[in-house]
Each structure stands twice: as C-alpha cells, then as structure tokens.
Length: 342
Image (cartoon, rainbow, N blue to C red; front, side, top):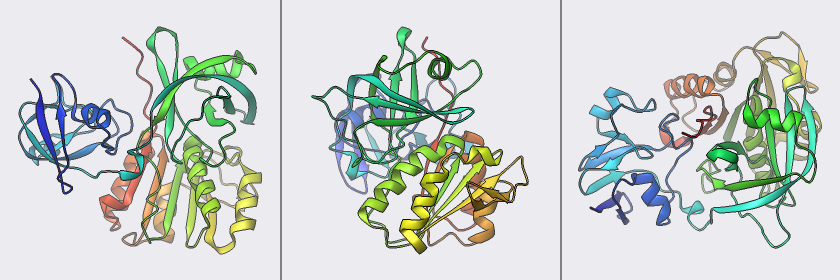
C-alpha cells in the first residue's frame, strides 16, 4: 500500500511505495533531503514527523535517540510510513536536477599525499560527464555487492578527473587495493554523485570549515569552488590531524593563502604532536572543535561545514550548538565505517 507524504514548509508532496523509506521515495521523485550514510548512523537525514507514524524497524537506529523519537523526530533514511505523513525537513533545491549515474571509469593516476593517504584520480569515458556539487561523494562498486564511499576532493569546474583522497585502513578491502594493487588504467565502477553535503551559496554568513584527516577532501572541493566563484567573506579552515605530516596539502594551502588573502585562513590542529607548524602554518595542539571555539566563542552568525570521523563530528556538533550555532547553519559529512554486503 502506498502512502502520501507532505513536506513542510514547502507543501510539496510525494508517494512512498510498500517497504520504501521516506528518503528513498523522496530521492526517487526528485526531492533532495539532507542525508549522508543512508544506514541510520550519521543522523544527517533527521527531521520531524508532524502527522502520521513511521516504523524504524526492530531496533532504533544509532543516529536517533529515544528522547528524539519521543519528541517526534525520525531518521528518514530508515523510516517507513505506517500511514500518510506530514513531515518537516529541509529541502535542498540545488541538488534536485543532478542525475545519479552508474558508470565505468579507469584509474588515471595514483599520487601518494602522505604515508597513509593516496590521491586517486579517476577518468570517465570520453562520452560521459558526472555533474556534481562540491562536497558530494561517490560509491566505488566492488565485487560481491560491497561499496565504498569517498568524497570528491575536486570542484565541479575542474572535472577532467574525479579526485578522491583514500586513507589506508588496516584490513580495509578497497583502501588496501588502492595502496597495494591498483595501477593506472585499472577499471572500476562508480555510482554518484551522492549526499547532501554542499555549500549553501545563498547564505550571506561567513563560513567555517572543520576537517578531520581526509575529511579535508570534500572541504577542499568546496573551497576550490568558492575560490573560483570569488571569495567575498571569511573562509577559515580548521584541519585536524594526529601529526604535522597529516596536513598533507602544503602547496594547495600556500596557493589558497596567497591568492585569497584575507578571505582564507587555515589553522592546523594536531592531536598527538606539539609541533609549532604544519604545512608551513602555525599549528595548535588539541582538537579541532576546541580550536574553533577558542577563536569563535559565539557561532550564531556563522555557517559551519564539517567532514571527518564520527567521533569528531559528534563532539563538535554538541560543542557548537552550545556556542549558539543554530542546527540549520551546521552542515556535516560523517565518515561512517563501511557496512559489508550481506
């Protein structure tokens, strides 16, 4: 049995088929909601059920607390309607006309950025182009049904290659392949672009960017895009890593600092080292969210974009909301661990 869903405050409506989640149905019919992992872990797709009921399955997804569910909140990537719904969720108009494609591609180049980080450049067939928004990600489709998600580290205007930053995880199926097996001209399959992590270009507020490790990748794509459009306000990047070697883009940082002047700053934040500098810039010891709050104790007038490990995202979300950041001015991509195919 199909159910009708009405989105507030827009008043848009769509239909959800049997056993289809609200997010699946919305995306299928061209309505772009915030989402990230699509497995109930990151919480990006959270919204409010104003009327009707949803079923999250036999166990509550980790991205939704009992208190939030009691308050009418739902994770739309897991929520299946029980009857007609009226929901409140932010719609993202910029993503609506972007087509998700499944495409073959070849490895164009592999460039080691750090001991445990590889830049993977993918070349699409000459007859294909992938339209995407800076900050989105794609899935690498592996044999057996597994898939691995990686953010695009390039901007849409610079799309000769699709550029991914791959960290080598011990035992990681795809990352080990990248570091030990892949070579130029190897053939892969991808699906994308995916995700709702991209810049709200209509906002007049200054922007802060918080990246942990290879969470720098999608932020780089965003900043490259904004630089090409012409920066006209503060863009401050806080890049967290264990040691100075983890700040693996010194040439890019130097160029951005030189070309964008007062509109761009970067603060490296090192959790396991007391180095005075990283990538030629003054570094801070500690955690990225603490570094942000030390400089910007009141976040009510900023837009904040975060990408990186789930623990970093969770700590920063709580701290930033405590510093006055409205939820609608926080955008994030939590790099949740891959779930193997069943």
